[in-house]
Image (cartoon, rainbow, N blue to C red; front, side, top):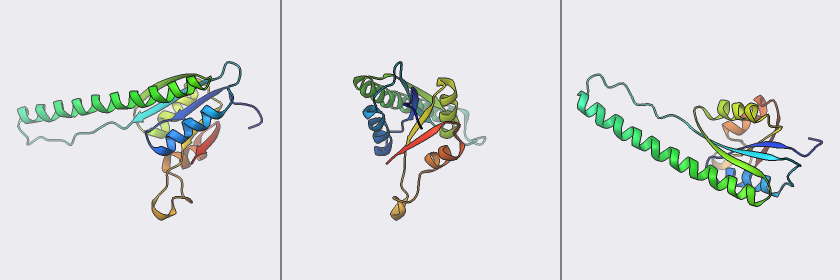
Length: 153
């Protein structure tokens, strides 16, 4: 990357790695008109088919699942709001977005929507090999993103 990134998308998932990704961007000097979109993707909860369960019980289960989904969305919104606030303190124009779907396709869609020139994600370790392996989102982003990808550890 020969130039300073002007539009950045940062994947936020609440992990220490994604907090480091936000911190890395905060340390970059914003380009003129620079902006950051912090994106948290929530995978949708899927209830199993329950044809043999009485309708009243199915309704109670669905209601509980909906309440859990609202709680997850609110927590995700707090995460992206906190990340955007940290980036604004560092001089960036920043906003937070919560999407529901599969993480990588949603992050890549956010990159296209923002016309970003950089995607920043946190790495994730796996067991004893955590220093050698990337998480599936980081690894796939490196392979599939049409823009530069910075992986923060």
